[in-house]
Length: 256
Image 1 (cartoon, rainbow, N blue to C red):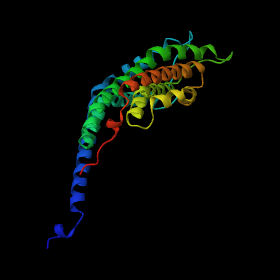
Image 2: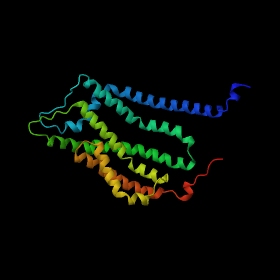
Image 3: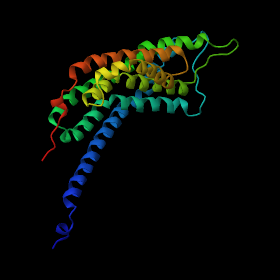
Image 4: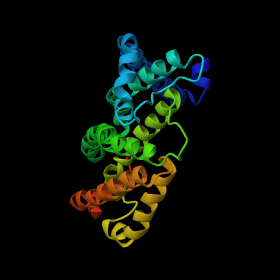
């Protein structure tokens, strides 16, 4: 008797191995996409950085300027920004590869909702970043110089400024996913629209707590994150009412 027939787990191991190979291929395609985007933009790294900090530099007091306090900051900071930007731009490809890997295991009704949810989540993530850059940054960077104690010179560091901006980009990008999270929670049967409405006050408080943790310690940026999260939650409730599953939708028979 051959070893293959003696091993009762071959039928399980081979499909698992195939899935792991496919997952490796999908991850490799995503990484290659990021590297290609990075290689195409690295030459313009300094220009990209200047575009990013434009809202900050526009609000600097007269006579102030940004500085680089680290030895390798003038090189490493634009390099880091370009790498992160490459990841941001590659998000559609990354999610597409993830979707291609997961979709064969989904039911037909799950696929019907997954595609618009995936597309909407990408759009909302980018919209959150755009909102942060054009609405939050100008107000926030105008506020910081106005509260400087007398005798203190305001000279932002280029690396620290980048870290704050990237943190806010992630925060607003993820915060704008609130409608998607709300709809998925309702559609999956984890909760209902009525229960979410009953706990609206707690959710609003939670939005301000999350904003406090994700943003710098100033009321402007915290409010500009918490209020859109609240509004997006209300939009999520509206759309969830349209897509709330019925008993027939949630009852999925076990495959024979």
